[in-house]
Length: 70
Image 1: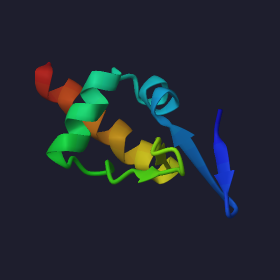
Image 2: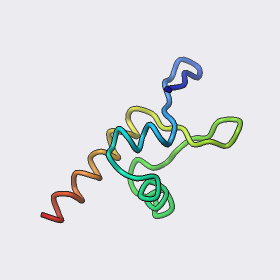
Image 3: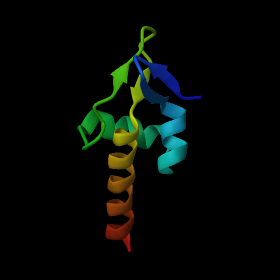
Protein backbone atom coordinates (compact mmCIF):
# COMPACT_ATOMS: atom_id res chain seq x y z
CA UNK A 1 0.00 0.00 0.00
CA UNK A 2 1.45 3.33 -1.05
CA UNK A 3 2.19 5.91 1.64
CA UNK A 4 1.60 9.63 1.28
CA UNK A 5 4.06 11.90 3.12
CA UNK A 6 3.92 15.68 2.70
CA UNK A 7 1.92 15.27 -0.50
CA UNK A 8 4.41 12.82 -2.04
CA UNK A 9 3.55 9.20 -2.73
CA UNK A 10 6.04 6.55 -1.66
CA UNK A 11 6.06 2.79 -2.16
CA UNK A 12 7.49 0.10 0.09
CA UNK A 13 10.01 -2.55 -0.87
CA UNK A 14 7.55 -5.36 -1.62
CA UNK A 15 5.45 -3.09 -3.85
CA UNK A 16 8.50 -1.89 -5.74
CA UNK A 17 9.71 -5.44 -6.34
CA UNK A 18 6.30 -6.44 -7.67
CA UNK A 19 6.05 -3.39 -9.95
CA UNK A 20 9.57 -3.80 -11.33
CA UNK A 21 9.42 -7.60 -11.56
CA UNK A 22 12.48 -8.34 -9.41
CA UNK A 23 13.04 -10.17 -6.15
CA UNK A 24 13.80 -8.49 -2.85
CA UNK A 25 17.27 -10.01 -2.97
CA UNK A 26 17.89 -8.36 -6.33
CA UNK A 27 16.65 -5.00 -5.07
CA UNK A 28 18.83 -5.19 -1.97
CA UNK A 29 21.84 -6.17 -4.10
CA UNK A 30 21.19 -3.15 -6.35
CA UNK A 31 20.87 -0.90 -3.31
CA UNK A 32 24.19 -2.13 -1.99
CA UNK A 33 25.86 -1.64 -5.41
CA UNK A 34 24.41 1.86 -5.79
CA UNK A 35 22.49 1.26 -9.03
CA UNK A 36 20.68 4.28 -10.51
CA UNK A 37 17.33 4.92 -8.88
CA UNK A 38 18.20 3.07 -5.70
CA UNK A 39 18.60 6.07 -3.42
CA UNK A 40 15.74 5.06 -1.17
CA UNK A 41 14.38 7.08 1.70
CA UNK A 42 13.33 5.62 5.03
CA UNK A 43 10.32 6.12 7.21
CA UNK A 44 10.42 6.47 11.00
CA UNK A 45 10.61 2.68 11.38
CA UNK A 46 13.60 2.47 9.04
CA UNK A 47 11.62 0.89 6.20
CA UNK A 48 12.72 1.89 2.71
CA UNK A 49 10.46 4.12 0.64
CA UNK A 50 10.65 4.73 -3.11
CA UNK A 51 9.05 7.36 -5.34
CA UNK A 52 7.41 6.72 -8.70
CA UNK A 53 10.52 8.18 -10.33
CA UNK A 54 12.71 5.69 -8.45
CA UNK A 55 10.49 2.87 -9.70
CA UNK A 56 10.77 4.06 -13.30
CA UNK A 57 14.58 4.11 -13.02
CA UNK A 58 14.59 0.61 -11.55
CA UNK A 59 12.30 -0.65 -14.35
CA UNK A 60 14.66 0.83 -16.94
CA UNK A 61 17.61 -0.89 -15.27
CA UNK A 62 15.75 -4.21 -15.18
CA UNK A 63 14.91 -3.89 -18.89
CA UNK A 64 18.58 -3.18 -19.73
CA UNK A 65 19.63 -6.33 -17.92
CA UNK A 66 16.97 -8.42 -19.68
CA UNK A 67 18.06 -7.06 -23.07
CA UNK A 68 21.71 -7.80 -22.31
CA UNK A 69 20.85 -11.41 -21.48
CA UNK A 70 19.13 -12.01 -24.81
